Each structure stands twice: as structure tokens, then as C-alpha cells.
Image: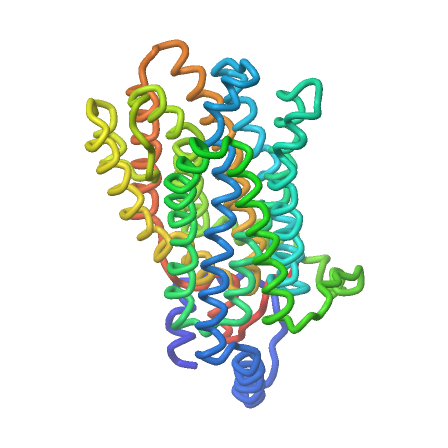
Amino acid sequence: MAILQKHGKNSCPDLVSIKEKPADNIGQAGSQKKWAESSQNWTRPVARIWTVVLLLGTCLLYCARVAMPICAVSMAERFTWTKRETGMVLGSFFWGYCFTQVLGGYVSDRVGGEKVMLLSAAAWGAMTAFTPILAHFCSQPIVSMTISRFLMGLLQGVHYPSLASLCSQKVVESERGFLMSTVGSGSYLGTLVIGGVGSLMLDLYGWESVFYVSGLLSVLWAYCMWKYLLKGEGPIITLESLGSAGTQSKLSKRNWLRLFRQPAVCAVIITHLCTASTFFTLLSWLPTFFKDTFPDAKFFSMGVSSVFTLFLCGTTTFPTAVAFVSATMGLTTFSHSGVSVNVQDLAPSCAGSLFGVMNTCGAFTGVIMVYFSGYLIEATGSWASVFGLITVVNLLGLGTFLSFAEARRVDIDLAKGRYHNIHI
């Protein structure tokens, strides 16, 4: 209690308004709450199994997501798309990605992240597998692909908020960094796998095979998760479970405004915005960069980071470009031990929703940067301007995080020594 009161002097005492209770009840209530929370956590063996499953799921998520950028050059040649039209198709994913971030976190915080993740994975996996059919049987492929990518964004937008919510609900605090870092590396692993294997499939069997394989594997993953981890329980989401916040919903707007006034919360949002937008831009345009710059070579890796991204501006050989891109992918995994986990340190009671806000901001700027990058490429005829822009945005995020980020919990009133969750 003395420690809580000591740190409470530096916190925001009016973050959550509560009524005073007798001091002798605080310890008993706190211990009962702590025991109830710990009893809901996964055991270490169960947590390890879920870590592997979620790592594979995130890997497949990015295999399905990057299938379109990998095939964009071939599809543009097949359907005679310009660079701007290609940018429109690639960027439409992020428009959909913006809209379901907060909703995904909201629902996950109430019904469980595993249910939301399961339903969405089955849907976006099926959508990926049906993409070639939509492209061939629609009279306007540019329209059908733009709509399908928008729907893919809607369905995949709930993955990371539900993952953050699931981690805050089921994983002990000391293990969250390991789980999020490991699972987060699935995004780079998936990008690497689809970049290499997808390129070979593209040459051997055509661009359609990339969508078929990644989509069907994703559906299979969702089925195995439902069958063996959830024991065949139906992922039913009822209106009653969504309304479980009850009478506390009246305080939602006030508490969220106070939460966003915290410098640490603003810092993690801005940092994630910069990191995500630059990653999305490279994710969308790197295959085209390699195809245009090194047409006779095979592309095997992709990634994000500022220093090595800047080196790409003057790259003249394919091995050097692959080395820089590979280095950026390795260095970016460190962000999952900082930015992605920091949201659970700041507000574990609403981690899914807050992560949804962060990803919405990142996706929105990703849309702008993907479109703007296509414009820069056509206007300047050089990729250096795109890589320079990405470097500046990344460094802005780094400076913000180093200046203002911290790990102190801000969704509770530390001055009064009680834990009170923020309800939306």
C-alpha cells in the first residue's frame, strides 16, 4: 500500500472517480481480485501451446495479406493496371483495416479474443481463397479487387486488438512480453515465407496459386484452433455478452478522455502510427520495387526499419537490397517488446480497445502513405523519395517513444490504492 501511495503522487488522481471505502477492506478485496485474476490465467504449458498456435496464425495472416502485393505486378500486367490503379487496390485494404480495429478490441474485451480471432480467421481465409475467382469472373477486375481488399481489411482488422485483449486476460504480466514478441514475429515470418515461396509459386503455377494456398491454409488453421484448443465450442457472440459493462457505460467518454490526456498513452499511439504506416507502405510496394529494379532476380524477403531503409535509396545490386531488407525485418522485431507490449502495461483493463485505437491510426496513415508513395514513384520516377519519406516517419516515431513513453499503469487511480478498470 505504501508503494502504491508513493507512486500515486505522480499519477493523475482524478483519472477514475471512486468512493472511499474502509481501509481494512482494501487489502481483503484486493487479494480476492488478484486471486480471481490469477485463476483465469493460462498455465505455462497451456501458454506455450497458445504461443505456437498464435505465432502460426499471425504468420498465415500475413501470408494472406501479402499475397496481393506479391501478385500485384503480375495482376497489373494481366489486367493492364497503372501504378496509381495498383496503389488504389493495395491501399483499399487499409481503408477496411481502419474500421474494425476499435470494434474488434471492444468485442474481444467482453467475449474473449479467441472467439473474435477464430471467426475472423475463417472469414478472411475464405476471402483470400476466393480472390482469383472474383478477379476472373468480374467484368471490372479493378472494382472487384478493390472491394475484396477492402473486405480483407475489415476482417483482418480485428486480429491484433483481439490478440492484445487475449494476452491481457489470459497471460501473467511477466510472460506478456515473451508472448507478444514471439507472436509478433509471425508477421515477419509470414512476410518472409510468402515472399520466397510465393514468388516460386507465382512463376511455376501462376498468381492464382498464391491466393489458393494461403487462403486454404488459413481456414485449416482456424478449424484446428476450434477443434483442439476451443474443444469444438461454438464461438457465439451474443448481445448480452457485449452489453456486460452495464451501468458503468455512462463514464466511458470521460474516462477515455482522461486516458488520452496521459503523455505515455499519446506517445505509444504516435509511435505505433509511425511504425505501422511505414511497415504497411513497404509491405505494399517492396515487391514492385524489386520487380522494377531487379527484374531478373527472385524476391525472398521484406521488412521495415529506418536506417537500412535509407540505405535502399542508393542500392544498385540485388544481393545488397536483399541484405538491407532482411536487416530491417530483424531489427523491427524489437518493437514488439516495446510498443506493442507497452499498451498492456498502460491499460490492461482495456488493452484490446486501446490497441484498436492505435492500429486505426496506423492503418489510416498507411492508406495515405501507400497512395502517396504511388504518386511519388510516378512523379519522380525514383524509389529514393519513398524510402526517404519512410525513414523520416520512422525516426519521428522513435523520437516520440524515447521522449515520452513509460510503463506505469494509467487506467487506475494509484493515489487511492485501488484498481478500477475503465469500462467502455
